[in-house]
Length: 367
Image: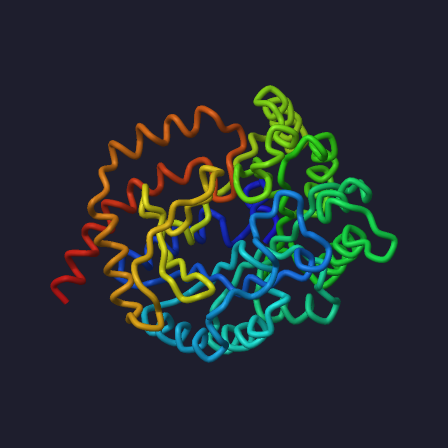
């Protein structure tokens, strides 16, 4: 997809897809599944992982959903109008064997997918498979300075493993396969701003502009291991504003992180089957204000029907006062420049979703 109206876009987060999925939601269907795969991450387990990682050990948690359970969940969601699966966070999806079963199933069901991946364990064959299966990818790329990027990825240097070089290679493979062309699945590069890489980010944006890739630039989260070194890693507001100006100048328009539809019209299912929402907002994602989310569970797919979980989500949202959220969000926006993944405009769209949720709740209650 690459570009739209002269601006870089990531198709799964484009205004067109967001509008389509909200319209599907209006028809009392479930268009999006926000699905966690395993907590497994080889980079984290063996090499320490990203210095700001919020994963505990990089190994699978006890009682994770198995392949059969995930397939059953997808079947139930297909019956409710599933159009997209978004995979974000926790572990590395390409390190989870059931990820490959899910790709096959979604391709057969004509359901699209968007995944975050560190890009290290991709291969040329896998990239081709993902492309053919309509899987859009967001690949980590914090710097084109190999030494700095490896430091971010591992916190230490080793002569036996060079993940940065592997990521660069796979970004090239993805472009060669056809990602970021006019049709087909799309690619974005995920960039987390730290003092280590802030000077390198304009080079990434230039590369993205030249190759029709969306640069997904996000501020550092005050979460996980980053809490311990946040004061060392996090740039000042002044530095972020200077970077934002440079990014706007390179692109030739104001850079805005788009809205992730999964936070608004999806069910968030964890790797152990819990359906969770952000306690404060009722959104499916709680990371948008760059702190550890405070999730509340609405039930588990092992014990509750998907329709029940959707109803519970809508019921929870119906008790939230939009005015209170607006005041709170105004305070959050005041301390952010880029914001996090999901977009700074997410709350404006969500206020409308709250009204829609109340209407949908009444419909389902009478069904």
